[in-house]
Length: 212
Image (cartoon, rainbow, N blue to C red):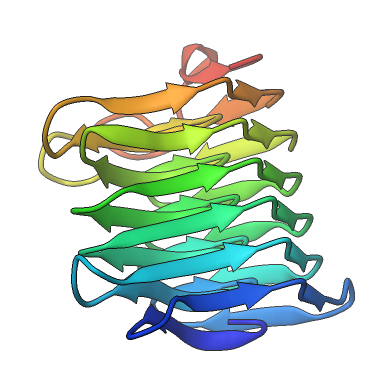
């Protein structure tokens, strides 16, 4: 990550706050690459991990899984939050789970992206979202009061098992662990979502969507 590689809550909350990365920089890595932190999470249900009031201005490039403008990945048994953060740079990866704020979320506790804005373009093979690439949330708020204000979200391939490319202006692929996953008071101002067809290769115009 641009600030830390790892933020794991232990006996006290693991917290990164009021940090800024500069515009003319690039964060590059293989798996789990983020503009502020690479990996975020907790090992037990009693612990909490937080990234708060941070700004990422650099470009983020991954060559594997889980690439995000603020956090590459959240894997949490407890509660994990990204709060009031902004990401300005483009986020891209040659593989999956790419998001303007976070690439990948799997949580057994309460996990939320709350009050965040992403401005950069997002590009990956599949599971690409303006806010989050892939999320599997339990019966709690997942994405709250957040905006994707970038121009373009692009999926360059498919996930292989069912051929879906999974790209949207908010969450590329959303799954529910238990109960309901809540997306609350969010907006996407994306101008274009680009995907490819099941067989690969760039599609006809009907696979390019605007205003989603």
